[in-house]
Length: 108
Image (cartoon, rainbow, N blue to C red; front, side):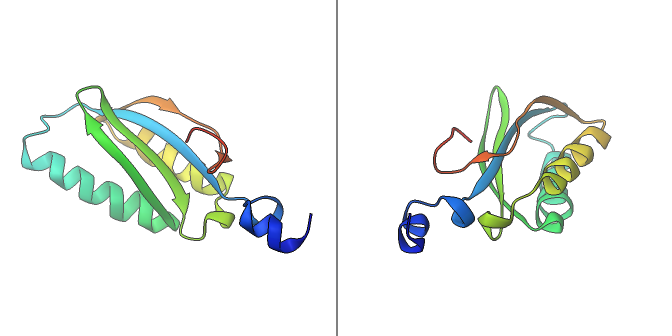
């Protein structure tokens, strides 16, 4: 496949990886501590590891997927850093934590 097509279809060296995870925040989501947790999560966990994230917060918990700022550079080290950060928190219970997947052709 020509380079132009590999780039268009995001395969080969243009493959973009992501990983998904979900967790419960054990504290009161209405309390200021939850907002502090979310700021710490974004700054100290996501941005500090060169990642972007998207997701939602529902009654079932937080459902997030993350990818590197340059999605072709997402790696296992970043995934493990996020998992370790969440596991170190006493106010978080990890529900699921997925493997690296193709962001365009998988269900991240």
